[in-house]
Length: 423
Image (cartoon, rainbow, N blue to C red; front, side, top):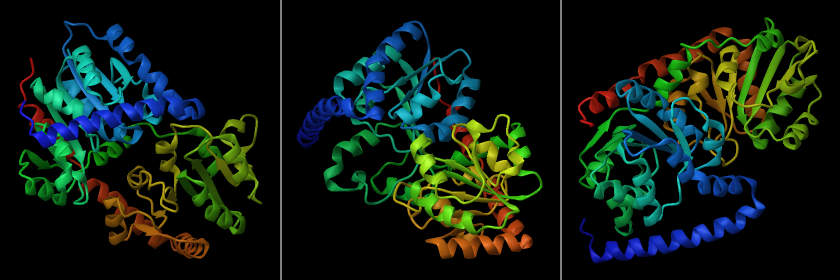
């Protein structure tokens, strides 16, 4: 593979910086539990691969940054597994928030942390997995891994990708990342703008397939979404489900809860389920509240607020929502998955910081989602939707229809892959 002198210098600098980052990561991990999990997990990666992947195995490798990308890629992974039942499936994560939750997922024969992007790690990882097809999800562009895949002529695709013109690929100083990006055999993007940006840099192996998250959340409707304890809690009353909330969200939600009528129920599923953070929120409430972990032997129908201090239930809980609030956009942490709520046909409220989330722009423009900025706007919006059942149903129907109209990315991707010849 030919590299220009500038690309060689950039790659050398990148490798030096990666090694420096690795040193500091190991050092800082002694004081940070999340980083410590990642460092410990990466030390075990090759042992896991050698225990589960043999030289004679045929392998497909999928990589996700974190849990959100896993959920985005899952319908594609399932379709590929069905198409190639004899292949082993390796799933890698970069973040503990993905790996620690999905390390036992039945979709994969081996789940590992992706080692840091050094040239040696890339060569060693690809040798251990010897994949015939590689699937990266959304934003993951690791130069050494991708360049090594290209060098070995291993087919690689990027799915549900989204690009912005301020990214390094579209700037003169981004030659290395651009070279890595062009290592993909095909890129499936979420929107026309991304497709046009790629074509502006002469990358033409691109398709506008849409976002696989629409297919993923639509599949939720095919599952049993019944939760007996939620039915016991809710009874026949209106219920607001607030999902993936942060302290900034909980501050304005708590203010509304404290002045809300007694016949309105609230289910709060915080993003961070650390007891200290949950207890801090509970202390701000003057309504009767209980935790999921403390519901045993309680008449939870007598409580007005139920706080979900566990993970993995939110997608089903949205099935019981008459109104939904999705967290992350009241602060700067990033809006969480609004499509999980939209698929159940409920109006959605979010904070004001959603500029990187096109689905939020779409649903707000259509009238199914509402952005609030403070206590006053939250109260005004909720009071209107609670009192006006017709407006509430209309907004929910808009969101449900939006999901239905944007499905199909998985079929687009699998149609392409059906023509890709694997061994």
